[in-house]
Image (cartoon, rainbow, N blue to C red):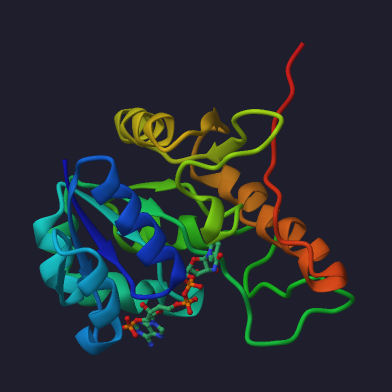
Length: 213
Ligand SMILES: NC(=O)c1ccc[n+]([C@@H]2O[C@H](COP(=O)([O-])OP(=O)(O)OC[C@H]3O[C@@H](n4cnc5c(N)ncnc54)[C@H](OP(=O)(O)O)[C@@H]3O)[C@@H](O)[C@H]2O)c1
């Protein structure tokens, strides 16, 4: 598959490298290509372009930018370049305020989510929340003693979720589909939970697993 990755931070780089490793063609998109010079050197098969070039390139698109800039980044990617495409939304709505006792602050409420806001603004993109509830170091081929961790996903388009489930399978995850876009109200705050041991005890090496009988 051809994948466009919008972003130049740790998540964008981890996922773009993962897509290349697993045999996909990949273009990263940024407003400032110089930020990705080192990544491009390490990943000679990877391409670097603007937000809109990456979105146009991708049959599927990954959104991995600062939460507060997510809407602006998708506008920069261009509505036409997103139409009908699976958009994997790895963002979290983290506010610009410090955590309280290790608990991050969000700019959304429990009756709203960033994924829903983006899906409303870009109705022709097929958004799927994924990869937001684990650190970038574990997104691709995680190795935990207890086996495959669980990635919680949601979105309104079942076909898009099947595509993302296939990618997660390839990247070493089991998937738990939590339903439609509103489920992002529960999945996005998993990021708060994931970060608490990090902020309190500098423990950042864990992932969630859903146990079933
Ligand atoms: N770090 C993690 O381990 C982790 C784990 C799970 C989820 N997440 C979520 O994944 C997303 C990316 O996280 P990150 O740590 O990799 O990077 P980040 O520092 O949160 O975001 C960097 C990206 O945001 C873009 N950006 C910032 N301001 C912008 C603006 N005004 N307009 C357009 N784009 C703007 C930058 O674009 P340019 O390239 O153009 O500068 C850059 O690509 C975040 O939403 C984060 O909450 C992070």
